[in-house]
Length: 166
Image 1 (cartoon, one colour):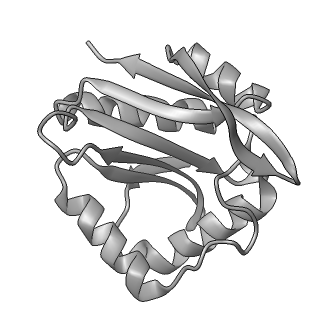
Image 2 (image 1 turned 90 degrees about the horizontal axis):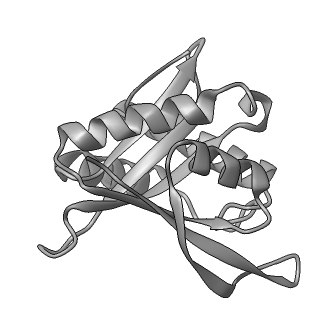
């Protein structure tokens, strides 16, 4: 297993990975089949991310298959270009094996190399394994988004978490 920056030719595999992760996880923003994905839009999004100096997508690959991803979406205005919002997704059969730690370490190295100062994310307050990972990696809770999402007809809170890079 290793990680690398996504390539345009990964678009279809990446769409499949996102669909699988969303189907397997209760805590992603989109649930199974809720996101409209198409190859042209996916390729456009990848090209846009690669063009931006403060955004990227890292993918984890094993035996030619994508098994996880870490996305950094950089700020678009001069006042927030130093920060990036993170989204992490890992196939359920590869969770609990250190892949999340590895992807976050690689993403942090990328962020430092690209002059970012702040990494931020939101996480459902019931996703205790993700919260433990983020805290282990130095992220701090900054606040709570009350009733931020509705999952299975239940309102759930999300934590704002961030890490300041030195």
